[in-house]
Amino acid sequence: MKQLFKNILIFIVVLFVITSIFSYFTGQEDAPQDMSLSQLAIAIQEGRVTEIVVDDLNLEITLTDETKARSRKELGSSLIEGLTGLGVTAEQLRATTVTVKRPSQISVISTNVLPFLLPLLIIGFFIFFMARQVQGFNQKAMSFGQSQQKDDSKNERPKVTFKDVAGAKEAKQELQEIVEFLKFPKKFTDLGAKIPKGVLLVGGPGTGKTLLAKAVSGEAGVPFIHISGSEFVEMFVGVGASRVRSLFQKAKKQAPAIIFVDEIDAVGRRRGTGLGGSHDEREQTLNQILVELDGFDTDTNVIVMAATNRPDVLDPALLRPGRFDRRVTLDSPDISDREAILKIHAKEKPLSDSVDLSNIAARTPGFSGADLANLLNEAAILAARKNQKKIEQIDILTSIEKVMLGPERRSHMLSDREKEVTAYHEAGHALVAHMLPHTDPVQKVSIISRGSAAGYMIKLPEVDKHMHTRSEFIEDLSVALAGHATESTVFGEIATGASSDLRHVTELARRIVTDYGMSEKLGPRTFGQKEEMVFLGKEIHEQRDYSESTAQKIDAEIDAIISKAYKVAESILNKHRDKLDLIASKLIEKETLEKEEFEALVGKKEKVSHKSVMVSKGTNETADVARDASA
Image (cartoon, rainbow, N blue to C red; front, side, top):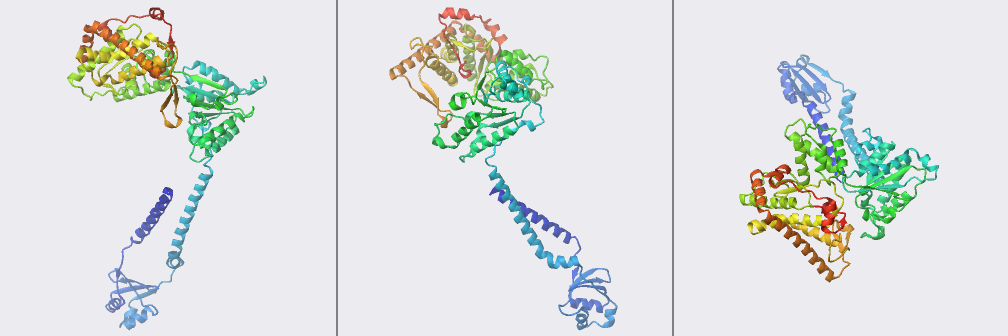
């Protein structure tokens, strides 16, 4: 309907323009004065008329003063008869030149034919225009089931290769075999090896799954056909399956080629969990993908690559051998990989000589490749805002905090009392983190508001950690509780600033007990099975596999762990109250303390080796920790 209204509006505008043009040209001539036939007769008698041009019934009159006039003669009688009847003599008529103008073909057509033909032409043009629109709608309807894939082989932009992908050494080595399959398939088929049907790239957001898929295409020199998993699914049942068939048919015509399906979990979720039973659109689309994958011939040379960060929700039939034969896992880059990624993204950015990318890599643990690209982009924006010609080290360091915590809010003014409470709160975090042996070194303490935080303390590991011990977790709890304990110790009451710390403490303590099996009383086991409800977004359903009495023990153990960590923080704060006051006063004065300034107040942090940690605690319990759970 919107398109129809648009077409009608265009038609009206065109008609208005044509009418305006005709009106413009017809209005250009000076309109002569009108004169009745009796007035013409009087003018002839007075000798004021020099010429009369007869054009059918119209009379074009030229007076002696060279002015123009117009009149009309009577129908059915000649001009001479009409003027004679009004008293004009023959002698008076001889003094006036009378010319009879013969009508031309164009004037006959414009006068008699065009008034009837022009409306017919306009109506015919309108009907033709509407018919073309209907034909276009029919073509769109017929192509509704065609896939909307994009083919990078037709683009002239430079190809991405493995040289453009920093880090991910094992992933690139695994994918190098796929490149060999595509470039030299006979080398493998002669030995009876079958070309892999599919490769599943698994990794967190921003780890480079799409970039690696493009690099495989660039290395092999084959077409790269990419599409999102959500583009298969429509409200009409059968459209997704039709698009899958269309996609694979087009890929086979361009073989050897790579089909890349981004976010395949949008269409490849486990079947049998939908509200529409086994016949809904998403499941039919998945069934068609399974058929196409398993129906490939060995000589088609088409490989399907897919990316997801939720492999746990994919249908088992999608992951079996013969469909997605390879699974390539991409982790967050380590410190050397982060430095290499920074160098790639810094190629087109003018960096100052003061920029140390190795230092930046050390200060960005847990950052993905996309995070690092965003970091340098934010630094470039900040440098441009300052009218600088090059990006300085301080710009990148400031951007790290912006990416992690949000932009500075210097307009968020705190009262003197709130500023003092915030200074002591952050000083408590920093002091406890510095004094405990297994925590990461403090890098910066600030009471400048960023994001939703009134202040912040940053501590970063000296080396990348992939495992955490129970001792590290307990000390992290003490650091998180230090702000709350400081407010209670110094001011005798608690403010609302510690709410986010308490949420983190409660979550981490529960995971220590229920997920990591680090409880001394409940033993090495997990509690509860968490499942994501597919149609409820992020809502998590926990299935209890323990009794109510065990639930009470879990709560009691969580309380005991938190209470123990709180007492440790409280004892450190009481023991080093003079240092706490010194740090807080400096924060009130300067608002921000860097690592060197902080250590000048409290001394260097003592380093504890991993071996001494294990001996002092008498345990060798470790656990894999997700990025969002690490403190």
